[in-house]
Image (cartoon, rainbow, N blue to C red; front, side, top):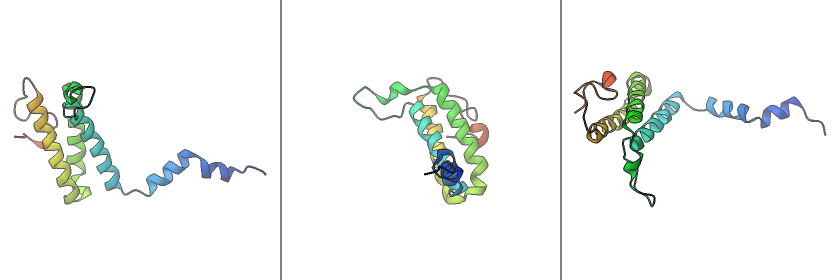
Length: 125
């Protein structure tokens, strides 16, 4: 049985990944990226659930959280006009919650407008 180039393309994981991505709407990719950033930022804000190894707050790293929240803010604010109000509203709500959680977790909270992502969103209170 001969092995053809077409058979290689059909089983190549990269080719399959490209096909999978081609079938996904941009709004879904943007939303998925935002959810990943939100999840990571929540953990870095110390909001992970407690487990048998200890409290979720042991994962707190506010320097990392700041970077993630700022990236999330940029994504949410710049993509909002393209993804529709329903998607944008829920992402903005999640972003605002993280910004407030960051402020609460900070031993020395930033001045209004200086918190993570606030250069994109404006001051959060």
